[in-house]
Picture 1 (cartoon, rainbow, N blue to C red):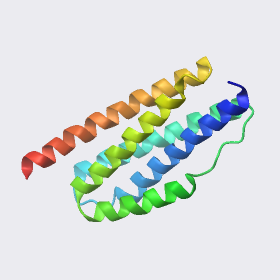
Picture 2 (picture 1 turned 90 degrees about the vertical axis):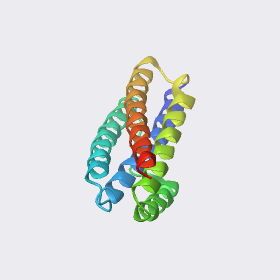
Picture 3 (picture 1 turned 135 degrees about the vertical axis):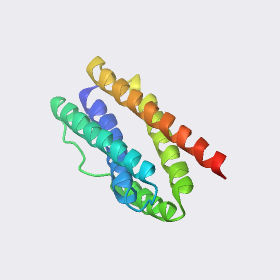
Picture 4 (picture 1 turned 180 degrees about the vertical axis):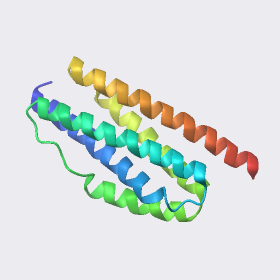
Amino acid sequence: MGDQRQIEALNELLKGEYMARNIYDQTKNIQDDEQVQNMLAKFQEDHDRHIDQLTYRIIELGGKPVEGPGMVGTMANLSAVYHSLLGPHQLLKQVYEGEEMGVHAYEDRLDGLDEVSQALVKQIMDEDHEHLKFFEARMDHEQQEN
């Protein structure tokens, strides 16, 4: 894959990171549940770091990083705010699905990347898999309470 195609792939992943970060930022303080607030704040920090890492890699490849999530990300953000008002369970379900889609986006682009970009993407995917485990545990806890 040429640098331009890699830059495009990494920029698509960067949009997803902006989307995740913005969703966590917008919804963490709406929740009354302190554990959910803390979890969302931690994951927001992770996605902020991913944004920095992807931005740096795109620049290294000679590209111009995107600066936001685009229209799809804006719509996802509005949906997340709505779901957060319905309670922690609805929000957790939605952000879990978003994290899962993000992992699949990384997996879909992995093979076409150079070794340096692959290593970065694998590290981000590992962290996102950890996010999914936290969401699963918390959603299981929510179901046991109901």
